[in-house]
Image (cartoon, rainbow, N blue to C red; front, side, top):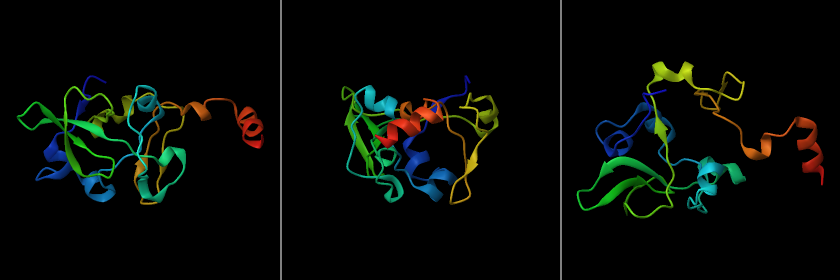
Length: 141
């Protein structure tokens, strides 16, 4: 997976905007891992998903504004600039479609979302890593 990179400002918002971002928008749910690393958790939610998994955070692009600020995608999906010393943002690495088969997944090959886009989940949410019978016991309490 050496093809991993970060998107540019142009790929997120401008003339080179990616088709997936045109269809889905730029706001993205923050991962538990990003939260554990100190990522900012907002009151915004992706697609009106008010569950814990639907909360958004902001994520960096690899573009800068020429004034020691990094371009980021803010919690509501808009373009924003942050000083590079600010550490509350998350990472949204990207890779070419041709590399998708090399991503280690949680054993599920993928599922179609409501909008028809194939989603492949990388890893596990900590609350879903336990065996199903344990999850049921914990959620019943």
